[in-house]
Image (tube, rainbow, N blue to C red; front, side):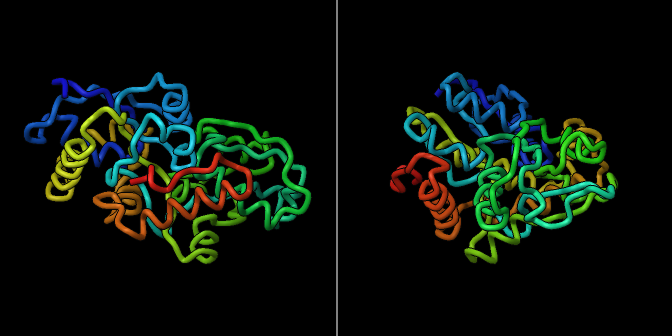
Length: 283
């Protein structure tokens, strides 16, 4: 493996927390990281068209399009409980107040190949008779202001929006994570770390785990790095974000993690939302 490895992940606190040690040369024997910080919609596209770096953070929903060239790594990503995407609406007199009210409405989403959007489509198939109207893709940090300002009828939000949506005066229509967990009993697969199949996946996984363990052992060392990329989040919100999205699944997906991923993608393929996958390619 070369002395430098190209990687793309989001500037969100969970990613910068996990990769801080490796990005700062604190992981023994690991190559230097050349980091590209990018929104998940961008990394999903880079992986799908083959122009991305050797290692990327993408949505689990994007895996069916990239598994031929990329391998899912068993660590470093985001999967858990109580951390799912939210569907938010405004609080005006014409605001949507129940799921059926989304029929024919304009909905903003962070990516059409995001896990959030996949969960939304599975949920909407059960709860929105006739289906929603126009889907508008926006960077996730623009969605809540657009809902607040009435530019769209509802927004699908992820990450720290869970902790901040009330400050925009928005209404929680549904928590898709709670819906998924009640429906399946499984954790929610959100973001995956993938590596090109011609690379040493075991070595890369070891470096990621070492970086994560360093972060857990030295929780304040990454603070400045995390906050410098956290899009003006307060230290308290950044910490809440990390505590929610960085967990035991970040160290090792384990059997329940792989079961959740397989269930999500198989169910989505059965609905015609993603291409069918060979479960053997996930490990």
